[in-house]
Image (cartoon, rainbow, N blue to C red; front, top):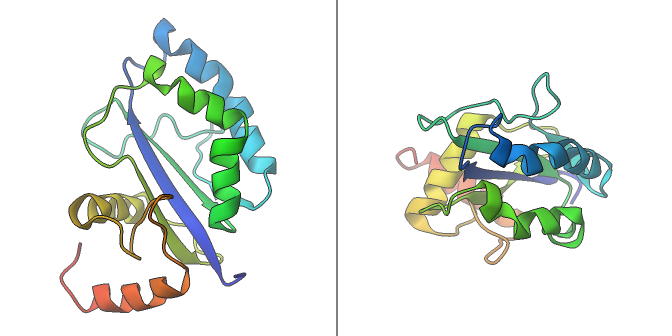
Amino acid sequence: MTNLHLAQINIGRMKAPLDDPSMAGFMSRLADLNALADRSEGFVWRLQGDEGNNTYLRPYEDERIIVNMSVWESLDELHAYVYSTEHAEMLKQRRDWFEKFDGVIMALWWIPAGHLPSVDEAKQRLASLERHGPTPFAFTFKTAFPPILEVVAAAWLRSRAPV
C-alpha cells in the first residue's frame, strides 16, 4: 500500500481561548503528543505552523474551533497512535477542554503518497461525511473503506456536483 496514504482531520470546539488557564492542561501536553506522533510508526506528516502545532489556525467562522490534520501510512498505524498511546489518555480528558460537538468531528480518506491535503480539502471531507455518512470519499475508524475504493469514489465524485 505504498502508493496510498491515509489522511485525517479532526476538529474540536474549545471551551475557552488557548491562553485561558482552563486550557493549560491541554496546551502543556500538546508538544509531547505531537512529538509522539512524529516518531510513531507510520507517521508521514502533520499540519503545523511556526509554533510547531496548528492550534492558531482558524479555518472556520467559529474562532473556538481548532483543527488537527495528519497523514499516515495506514489505518492501523493511525489507529494505534490514537488509541494505544498517551494520546488515548488525552481523549479520555477531552471534555475538560472541548465542548460536545453536534456534528462530525473526524474524517479519514485515502490520498496518493506524497500528497499533502489542504485544509479546504479536509473540510470538504468532513462536510461529505456529515451529509452522506461514511463513503470511500470520507469515512471513520468504525466504518473504514479499503484504499482501492478511493480511486473509484474519486472518479465518481468528479463526475457529479461538488461536495
